[in-house]
Amino acid sequence: YALSNTMSIYNAPYYKVIRPSPIGPEIELVHIGGASIKRKLEFMIDAMLLLPKHFKLSFHLTTSHSVTAPEYLNYLRKRITELNLQDRVFIKDTIEPDGLEETINQYDIGVYYLNVEDLANNKYAMPNKLFQYIHGRLAVVVSDYGEMRRVVEDNEVGIIPEDRSIESYSNAIRLVADNLEQYKKNTDVAAKVLDGNKEWQKLINFIDDNLT
Image (cartoon, rainbow, N blue to C red; front, side, top):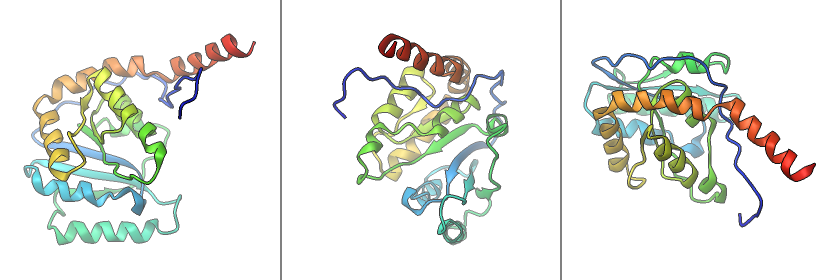
């Protein structure tokens, strides 16, 4: 936005002692967030057709933010059935914020596809779910937007797809799965770095340095 004397404060959870979950025979993907048609969640469903059958995807979606969310959920369920993915893609209950990181710890990879070009602030998008995935000790695959790329690559917690195609997205998931143990191990380190307590302290220090 061409502003000066600014800094980013990440809306990261407070650090908790959580260990990466063991890796089983199935690779468990998860997406948390709102059931919004603008987010094109069906893309992540379609991508499952390009992944081996031992890859599973669970959605934990909220509907309270949009009057069209229940209708969109029905559309997603229909798409899952049409693609014969009922045994690999699941729409599950919403997870309450308290204890969210502990709940998603059962999964392996947190996924987030974002491909909305009409909003300029997407370039700087830093969704809460990215930090929640990391604090849940999940490897991550998220779309290529500058700030998200910085967090993922600086902390080596996952892979950014080469482009926004379904092929690149599914390939990134495969690559993360090939080195899943290391990526999950890295999230344990990253959670200490991306700690909500440290982010608040950054803000306090910034205010002290510039406004007092």
